[in-house]
Length: 334
Image 1 (tube, helix red, strand yellow):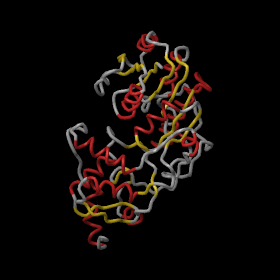
Image 2: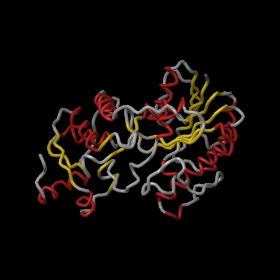
Image 3: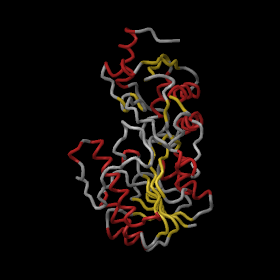
């Protein structure tokens, strides 16, 4: 099996490369060579996928059985279209990692793969949807990228729509933020309630599914009613030495004091559809999601090994400072 991995040096791309190499597959990676070192065992081709000459040079390294695209998160549909046009004759199948943001109803509505996505132009520029706000603009761009892939690969295409991806190698700072906070100990502000269901998926499970999923569109998330915010934050406290004590604050209290969702307290969002993503189709097709406690433990091991940017880094931020105010209003539960 010979695959082409667009990206391949960090987080999801690296996890895909590691998985494919472990299978004994031949792995060509295509990236600019700027973000991180190439994984030993891969066959790197350096270039810019927005450059026609670089794409033409890349095509000379084919053909491939499979293309896995993990590096188009900030690309316009027209740029993805240019690449797929070149690769359509060089690859049997194409896996595009999109996002649940492509759905018109996210994050306010429960989602299935039959939920409508944004109107999508496969040749749209970066400006497409720019006047509709950041969230809508991003969703329209991703839907356009999906359309670009489908226009060239059709029923040879697999579209993956993950929500939140966590695990070793994460660079966004969501789970590392909570692990860092738990390591410092003391009373920890915990948003919402311990029974709030969440659906983050481990990066290694996404990588596995990307290499094995049949053509089609899939929501890639943990089972909807399995994991909770209490499971997630409790695991953070446990793996860091049980120094922290969770003190839960309601959504209403946090929003009343202007705490910003998703950023000031990572993974906290009150919109009803945020963690209401039906991933039944993906699980039936072979997606297996490991327990959230394992993801937390392995991420902590990665951080403390020195591979996570030299150790644990992070601050309380405004969300942590808000606890000083909240503590004056209500006694933290035991």
